[in-house]
Image: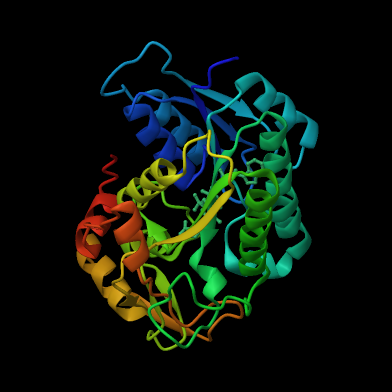
Length: 332
Ligand SMILES: NC(=O)c1ccc[n+]([C@@H]2O[C@H](COP(=O)([O-])OP(=O)(O)OC[C@H]3O[C@@H](n4cnc5c(N)ncnc54)[C@H](O)[C@@H]3O)[C@@H](O)[C@H]2O)c1
C-alpha cells in the first residue's frame, strides 16, 4: 500500500489557507495546496501568500517535506479527482470557498456551486482515494441572528440570514452525511471573524486600516453597536491543527463528525473596533454612518467551552496585539 504523507489544503493561496499551509510546513508536513485564484480579490495577494508558504523552513526537516501547489478549480470534478489520486493524502483541509456575506446575496448560484457542489466534489474524490480524514472550514454565520449568546455548537442553526451562511450550514450537513455513510472522520470548524496579516481585503479590519491610514471616510453600518468575536489567525490555526489531531485514527471502523467553534469568546463592538484601529494606525477615524446591510448579523460570540475541553484550544492573542501584528504584517 502507498504510504500517505501528503496533506491537501484547498484554498491554500487565500488568507486562512496560506497561514495553515505555512504552519503545517513548519511542522515538517508535506503540503499540496490547491487554489483557482478566484477573482474575489486580486491574484497578486494570493501569489504573495504562496511565496510566503514556499519560503517556510520546517522546524524539523523530514525526508518528505515539501510544498507543492496546483492551480485547480474545486468545481472541476475530474481535475480534483486526478489530483487526489496522485497525492493519496492522509488528510484534507477543505478551506476553499467563496467567502463574504454581502456578495453572496448578489451571486447565490456561484456560492452554492463553489461552497456546496465544490465541497461534494472534494468529498467524493476523498472517498474515491480512501482518504477518510477531513477538515471543513465552516463559519459563525451559521448561527444567524441567534438571540442567545454566546453561541454554542449545540444551538439550533436553522435560520441562516444570507446565502453564504446557508451554504456553510449545507456544507456541515453534507459532511455529517459523508461521515455517517462512508465512515469518514470529519471536523467542521466554525471560524469567527478571523483577522491578522494577509486578511482578505474585503473584511472590515483590513479595509478600515487602509481607509484610516489614508485619511478617508470609514463606512460604519448601523449605530456601531453590532459586535464580532474577532479571532487572531494564529489562534485559529492552532485550533485547526488540534482538530486534525483529534480525528480518530484511520483504522477505527466508525464514522466521526464533530463541530467545534474557533472564536475568542471576547466580542468587540464595531465602534470599539474602529477606535482600536485608529489608535494602532495613529490617526483619528472619519466615520460615515450608513444603514445596516442585509445579510449582516447583529453579533457573533463564540462559546469555546467544547473546543477548550476537547481540543485544548486556548486563544491567547489580545485584540490590540493582533491589530498591531496585522498592521506590521508580522507573520507566524
Ligand atoms: N476569514 C474569516 O473570517 C472566515 C470566517 C468564517 C469562515 N471562513 C471560511 O474560511 C475559509 C477561508 O476564508 P478566507 O478568509 O481565507 O478567504 P479567502 O478568499 O482568502 O480564501 C479562500 C480561497 O479559496 C479559493 N477558492 C475560491 N473558489 C475556489 C474554487 N472554485 N476552486 C479552488 N479554490 C477556490 C480562493 O481563490 C481563495 O484563495 C472559507 O471557507 C471561508 O468561508 C472565513
